[in-house]
Length: 255
Image (cartoon, rainbow, N blue to C red):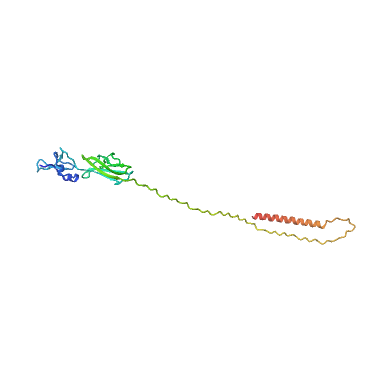
């Protein structure tokens, strides 16, 4: 009788084949296995008996698994970060968490450097590397996935760092401001209108002189004619002065 066979679930989920699972089996399961999937079965006790879910062992038995590396960026520049992403999973794509991944710089810049990381719930471990040197480096990653030791390498070429060119300096000239000269206007002076005061001088007509002979009367002294004229002149001048003062006050009030 041949060895156990891979079931349809074993083939679709893990890529199992009969040659892979051809090993000694040492137990079988009966009854309801619940949500468990049967990966390997075997007809027991005879070849015509119902196939039973069996456990295989007693030899070097391992399930197929996958271990890959991804590099980003593909051509890094010296001084930049390089991200190495390791993914551990079964052949069917089931993530394998808590897998320790070790990356060694096998050759090239920083040769001999060793870095480690552990896969998360998605089966992914991330390692960041930076170097200031240029050249080709080989990164070798190792891990044990589903009991199988895995080794995978990646080759990276570090390019010279990017040359930074200073932007041209632009000089902005401030706009020229032309200030018009100040023009000072002389204040406008309004002259009060000139009032011409015409003095009215009354004409005094002297009465004709009548000579009355005085008989035997003592000689009387008469004021000279010039004395009377002086008095009249003074009175008229005083009136004119009063009129001038009155006109002046009136002009001031009007202002």
